[in-house]
Length: 274
Length: 315
Image (cartoon, rainbow over all chains, first blue to last red):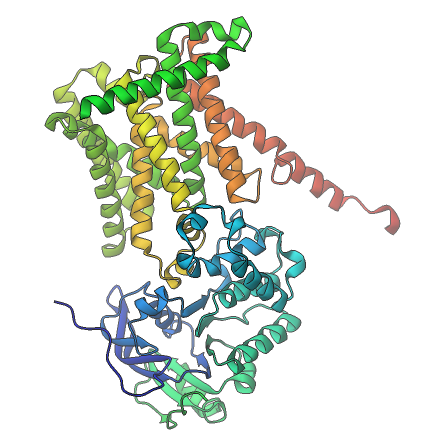
């Protein structure tokens, strides 16, 4: 017997991400407790919290790498597994999570972002090497490389890139998926000022095109300037609302104290896009 | 039905042997002479097949950091082979069940205890190996055990050759058909998960392929040395290229070269075939380590020297 995962909703615009009473633990150590989140589609959310606050755990649950102890998770009103198979969830990993020694070029790395969509290609196409993939996939790859300003490095091995370039390749790979929901794990960590501007402008364009952007970050400044809403998290939700209400000393102090329970302040939820 | 398949298989092997001998016929007599014996012809075909399959799979083993897991599975295969022999099953079935159980057991130990991966693997595979040694000691002679442990390619008969051929074709087809999931899972499992691929299926599929390769190599290099053939060709190729497809081709080339040269040397010098093959592979790695254009020791030493030397412009 399996509980139906898909909850039928009559609202025309479901939340991009909806999490109800979610708890998760590693080896019996709780990381997330009773978390409720509703992220509207088409908005830019910044998730802020100290290390070990469960930010990455939240992503791992959305990606299906980790199973929650309790609670319900839906993406666009559906089971996340189904949304992943449909290619609606793109993920930009932290730089350390990727094997940079792997024998693969920049453009082939970005092409892996299209592997989900290639499932709909005719079967004989899929038996050819990726180099001969349909031109619609390569068009997207070239466009994404152009967008992150890495066209000139297309055939370089990924191991030969600098830190900022590696980040931009990871972003291009996530964008190549053309997903409705973008999950970004610290997209700004360790990048130079020029790369940071480029990444933030690119994400702003994604949001303007109607995509949902969710990023974990430690950078208050960019969160204040770019995000529509900020989610403060430390094992449970500390606060959620407009950046100006959340990124104040009092709220940040509450977030920094581990295990701080009650919800301090929560703005009424944003209207779903537009 | 089985008889027809067997006849077909033997016909296929004879055809392959005939083609192989055409190639050998082009060699100078001194090199070609050992292959006038039919046992050497069978050994040559087996060695080429095993070198190729191991070379192909070793790319994934090296890139996925599965060297120790490969070692664990190859040792754990022993009790599977022994029990399959007792029950009259094909070797491969027993080997795969033992290999899969071991990898599941390693995963479970890792997740549910404080043990780290290396301790979990060491514990599981030595225990399984010991079980295998005990069972085989009860049911077979010592020479039989030695053949399974260290291989005896000169004594390969048609059934074993047929199994190797079948395993090789299956591995090749699987890598070809599932190239993209395998690439993605090896490169970035999180990304594979995000794109909705069934990573559990890919994981165990890859372990199945590994077990298949190990069983296919049983007669040539044996259980103990097969892991060398699952690491060395891939490691050598990894030093030479920045492209996965090129790496696979180079790795297969290294595996086949090592197998053929090792077989020849073992005949000429009258030494164990498994040992000779692995030593040739290690020698190829050593040469590559010294001379590889980008990642080789000489190239790195040369680059460091040029960096240290004051540039003429700066005076």
